Image (cartoon, rainbow, N blue to C red; front, top):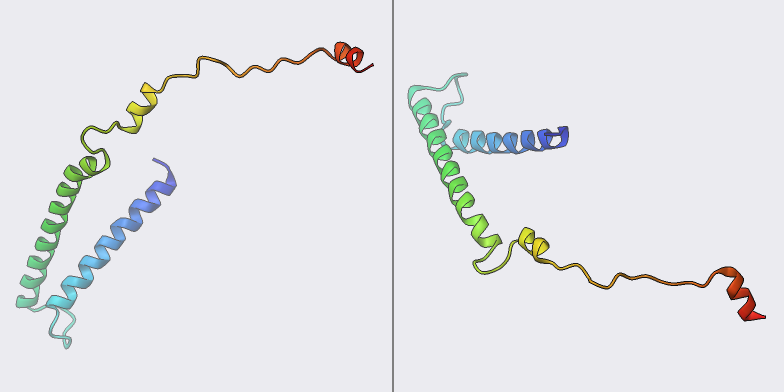
Length: 108
């Protein structure tokens, strides 16, 4: 895997992580007078993260199942099958040209 793909994966991970953190913080943090979560907030955060991860996992499973069906509808050929079934043109495009000495004689 090259560095561009690694950077892209890191960006995607950080986007998911930041979205998850923001959602659970907004849903669970209530007491801003202390630097730590109280018991209720901690339980809420744990449940929120569990729920978000479960939903994300379900979306990925459905996507993995449905994406190929949507991309290659039944009865249609995949791009690989189209390339394999393509027949080369039997007549090559060859241009014939007269040698220069003959072309000069014809013009005289």
